[in-house]
Length: 428
Image: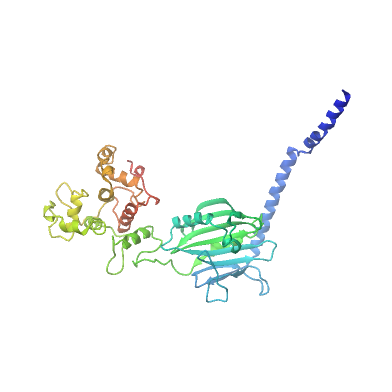
């Protein structure tokens, strides 16, 4: 019996020693305070280092931008060199990465490498924040962009850990702020990036650090972001001289222009902010390619009952088609008032009636009882289709040429990803 007791005692000794090795609550608190103090000291060192850095302006004429980078102390100092610049006016080499221009600003004096990259990706149309998000999603599904792995048969070794992806604003435009880490059997680094659209390109400015826990040179990345500027205004890439690439409805206008649904004026302008009248609105929706030319030619304009519309007026065939399709009925006094500016409520009825299916129109009588008067069903229809541009704040708001284009574009191409007002905005 005594032997068993001795054996049991010996067995319990390691357990007692493990428990004694656990740090006390005071020790844990002190360790945490020390870690915090170390982080504060590191932050102070980083700030002091940032204040000591001198910056010089670097201009890349061919790529249409400039930025400030840490100045080189002397010609023998390779610190913060710039290479891989796609610029035929300089002695730098030319390199393309995933179809974009590529610039690397590299600090290689230290054990770790700290790099800032500026890249651009070409797009076929005017780039938007939606294109940026789609491009970022595609990048996450691709093999590593490093030369070693771009054409490798081992893409499965790639490990991409997304830390954060936030909506951001850069240079006055929507952008993405991204942080992620990359690791595989031979490499590890973390990156912070800003991605934004500009003209027909998607730009990325990113900071890469290898094994750097303190982000010692993050302030340089911030300085490049703050100093980055394009040399010339953003090109419009438009058929219209008064339509800029960053106009909120540029894509809609360009799309309808390509479809020949809308056109510009003889002086090459589109006048996107000009208000449109009732006759012009009807003509656009009842012209080719939206309406067959035969329907226009065969519509009997003599049946028009509007007291202010002569049978030979320029828009008579279009008004005739609109009446037959139930898109418009006129005012109680028997007039059409084609020269009047069209309101959102009036435009809502016209475009809803034109694009809605029979089954959707069948619900409108019941929808009238939900409030909003005669225009309630049409605003509800457009709300469901996410086809109410944010400028249309009230039913009486006049419709401009650009807003009209946006409404038609969303309904024609079934675009439901753009920002839209809803029935709640109109108390419906």
